[in-house]
Length: 100
Image (cartoon, rainbow, N blue to C red):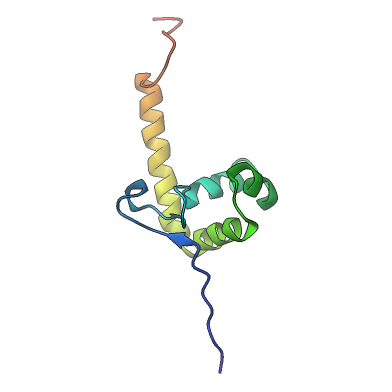
């Protein structure tokens, strides 16, 4: 008989990052690790150093992503849409437009 062992390194809490999955004990979202790996093409070692995480935490975030890919991809797309809207409206910009 097999014994299933769980590594509890990912957590969700409605009071932290609107309930989006994070590395337990931090506010680092799983999506941030995914973006670092897939978009910025960082290695797990580089991500661990940049975010001050263990390799186990990085791999747990990536494993969680691949197990919940559609959900995390949707969260990333929603965050990108918000960022694009802010850019379009120049919200958060410290510089005045050069033209216009």
